[in-house]
Length: 159
Image (cartoon, rainbow, N blue to C red; front, side, top):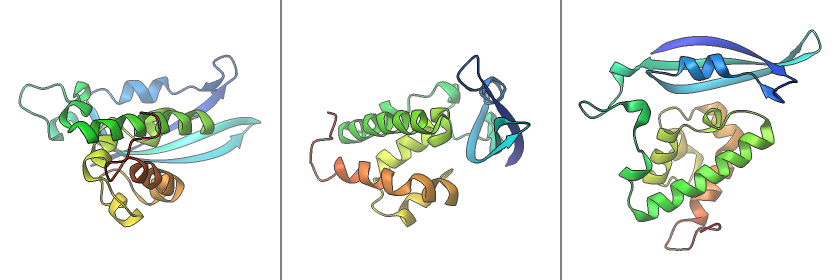
């Protein structure tokens, strides 16, 4: 596991934080956890990201597969795919609400893991690699609610 720090300033022209460097950095890497810290520097909103990651060679990908392009949703059963879709909608709403990129909320791999395991409590949610204390504290109850809404044979809210 490796760690890297990114600092992103709010770009008024883009209307969001400039995350291009972080997006490029992810090529060939699996982001395990992101801890974000918001502050204002010289009157400019700024986010610092502490990123735990590992190189692509350390991924649990199939031989010959480009892990960054892996179809995580396609590996799930039908109920898991519905839950994955709900989590993706939820992730988009959270990202928009908080002004951050969706992958900072959950990566596709983490969403697939949640959809596969269907955790019913924060403790079970934190057992998923990359969902640490910060994500569980910040969004855990919302994630559990999405899982609960799509579990037990019930129809997902947006299905």
